[in-house]
Image (cartoon, rainbow, N blue to C red; front, top):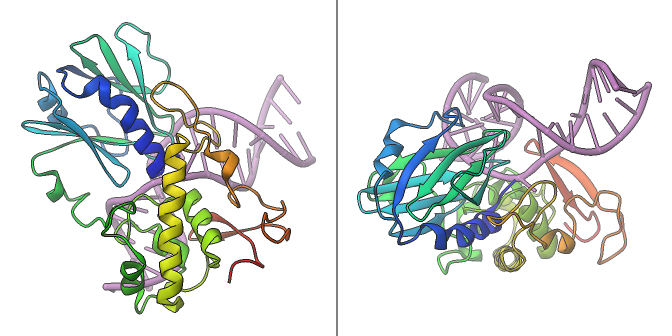
Length: 270
DNA sequence: CCGGACTCCTGGGTGC
DNA sequence: TGCACCCAGGAGTCCG
């Protein structure tokens, strides 16, 4: 479920509960997530949380001796609750704070993760080779154009590849490509520098607006307070197969690219 | 190196 | 109601 805006929304929600407080207990109810939750996560016990960072779709909870790394996968969410609130089905771990507040991880599909990193987090093998943050100055059209030289795969897969740029998932890839007028199946290496400039701007714009709306709730995304995100109302193509393009009225198409549904306007996107 | 297929899971929706 | 089937917001891994 969650792409960059949903992870960022989650981070902002749990930040005040964690930052500056002590993790009293890391209570793992079900360690069988994407990777088995390692015993090393107990290094967080008794530690002050210095701050929270997001790197792509990974949430980093920084302590003085390292930190926790959490990924929400397809169906994960973090909710704030009180110690003593009975866990529901699929509530796999809790971060119990000294304040009595709890950050609780819920994930039916268990594609999410909880890991420990030793400092510096930048050298963790899951993070080391990640591309730039899309909302940073390090990301622009020139970066995309340069990295696309010689590539023949679909541009949609290209921008969803975390080694190229992080945080762009299936929804926002479709949206940004529509905004830039680029067909999702076009070869990444056969797009001009100018069009990549437009695509980079579209990616920044759609992610920024989605964050301001609290993310996209299609089925089950909820923020740390249990609130849905409101960006679904602003989606231009995603999940709109057969509906009229807002620009030209032609029906929106759906096509599977890289084993994922892609939505686009066959007239506006080339 | 690149690209595509497969994989890990559960649950919701649909059609018969 | 039951059941089979399809689909789902991620992304590491493997294979050609």
